[in-house]
Length: 561
Length: 72
Ligand SMILES: Cc1cc2nc3c(=O)[nH]c(=O)nc-3n(C[C@H](O)[C@H](O)[C@H](O)COP(=O)(O)OP(=O)(O)OC[C@H]3O[C@@H](n4cnc5c(N)ncnc54)[C@H](O)[C@@H]3O)c2cc1C
Ligand code: SF4
Ligand code: SF4
Image (cartoon, rainbow over all chains, first blue to last red):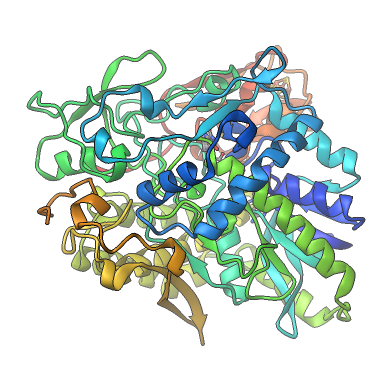
């Protein structure tokens, strides 16, 4: 099999919104850039499906405090207020960049049309108990992702499409590149770099009904293995699907035609009824509707009926849809250590859904925030990596380490038998998909799932085999999903309270004395170790506020105090 | 049944659907210059292959393999 070595100043892994911004900004800073993606830049990842982006701009009448309050209350105080502010403050410049890239926005009289948060248009109970939803979005016109790709090409960055990165190359505790193989043909490549930006998106479990099957937490897992901390794994991004015809109609043409398709139950739908014909009450945080339907199912009142796309017809809905696959919505990922998106491992920067800034906290708090975050962190990581690549001295290449990495990349192809990636993925899905594992959580059920996941990790993953080039990719994705599952279960077990999109049936209340803290995971001598990191003082709620005012939404099993 | 068919009579072999499929379901038969559905069971119904300039790709509801819902 052919083997090549590529040399660059800055290597960007993943070419969604974050990776494209990183590549352009690192080029603007004068560095050589190589951008790799296992799909085709502008067509892969979550980016092509996004219909809008939030832009904070005081000249449009936006008030910073009001925007921050929205995030604090919806995100139940777990947002890192410093990052929330950075993302808001940078967003207008990124919007101007997008325009300079040629992205067109819906406009009236030369000004972009600003749309209010869609939930402000729905009658919902308890609305008056919350501060108003003030954030606004702008809509780009169809075809915009191709403009992102064009901007990267124009910047002089080199794009390598359809290339799967399998691991980061390390030397003296620093990241010095990455290794992987071509999707078609599996030719291997070593990518040596002065600095690396990880922008490989988030991670789900190839859930039925949701087009994010290439997002298998590769970035989170590779960075974790290199020594980074990962955070936010206990939170979810709930999106249901239609159980009769999951994933139908395909999302891309709907979005590309300029419609903002709604997923049934992505937020609370006041028309949603249970099997007895009764309206489904709001239970989850701030009308996100995220365990409303799950709780009805739990109580034996499924099917739950809701109107959904493409025609607004009433149909039953079910999970898992995109559960946990829109990681930007939960802002879980690799922990940044400063505002250049540097990580705990020198030479590695994180951006977009790969980057765990915790800027939204425990629940997604505003439309368009995910792409805004990807653009802002992408630009910052690109500049940070460029500066590191310029100033740090380069290590001499470690030929042996590189050869071993390529061996590991191809190992499933060398095995003559073992376990297939598809079967293993199915076992994993069966352990995680039922609503009572990752949605309505409880210690014994989390432990039961973890037992299966640990067995997959120890016994099955080392024996994954691939019969052709396509399955080699699946084998690596499967291994990463197993690692991501372990992260989600361990983080969920540690957080012995309920908050935002993390609901524990055995701990149905928010527990401020113990849990105004983030859960982080790191590798300690080969053992995945969860620990807590208290949130900074400025992110905490006012302790003088009574509990029921701090948290106006009641969760099942929790009586208001 | 996911990606159901590619109409070989109109496929011009441009390879756009192959590039645009994020999950490597479609491959190009380079000799015949035709796109072929190589890994239908992995199709996630995203619809990106509908970018085909000849309108040769047909998608249908349904999944190519067994799956489990959150409840049912
Ligand atoms: C259907 C849908 C609708 C959405 N709507 C909106 C919206 O309206 N507004 C909004 O703000 N947000 C929206 N989001 C969320 C938003 O799109 C994402 O949060 C954002 O685009 C993430 O950008 P990213 O660059 O971090 O990651 P992605 O766009 O996911 O890109 C990651 C890239 O990394 C590549 N990659 C992954 N692993 C590897 C590997 N091992 N080797 C090489 N490459 C790899 C992938 O192929 C992919 O191209 C939506 C998401 C979805 C799925
Ligand atoms: S995009 Fe259409 S014409 Fe081009 S290879 Fe695919 S099916 Fe054929
Ligand atoms: S619908 Fe999406 S996943 Fe299926 S073949 Fe087309 S591009 Fe690939």
